[in-house]
Length: 305
Image (cartoon, rainbow, N blue to C red; front, top):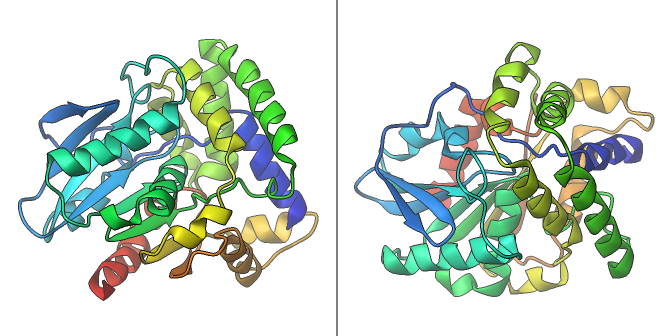
């Protein structure tokens, strides 16, 4: 399992927490408003608010199948982080902090009462971070393969983590457009999705993002470790852990679905109300590899609140 997860880190460091879509189009036609560094679309007209946050290099289209199902009974906000899916990159630095402040602003400006944040990958990490800092704003969090610390880096000293983040940023920011596209494709084929026929289609979508912005977000993500703060995340949390048996069996140290689920639970730190649900067979983009299973898991969690 350790060697397999090391491959995960290597892929992340080669620019890969890329977004996917089940269709080569946006989730649905909707007016877009700008809230801080976020591009936001609203779907649905009634019910508890849900904010969908895609991962690195993703646009709102990553939730193409999730939005229609949720919008029947929820007011759904899909957000795109600045620099992704053709949007301009943020100015300055501290991109994740800017995105977090923008989420808080969205909640305030739209007068959202205890919204549920559903984030994938980097978006899941962002949702967990907000829950650990301002839990009073939220009703719950669903993190799809996003964690308070990048797997297999949890034992690194802070200084080493920071140095690795800066080295990765410099390497990724220097990628040519062709290299960036190749990185996206390689990731989609090996870690992003179990569907090789769709890997090229999804890589083309994720390649619409700004490589330098992706490098900055990825470096900031690698530098994070807020497991200790998770004791303050008092809202219900559902962590979704994808599992693909072929990958587990092929690893130098094979791991089972139960072992991966337990490891992901350990990385949530001291979160008092956190559970982990496995979705199989799927890779990093569980909501796209197994949309029906993902929706059933999400709906069950929302109904339990």
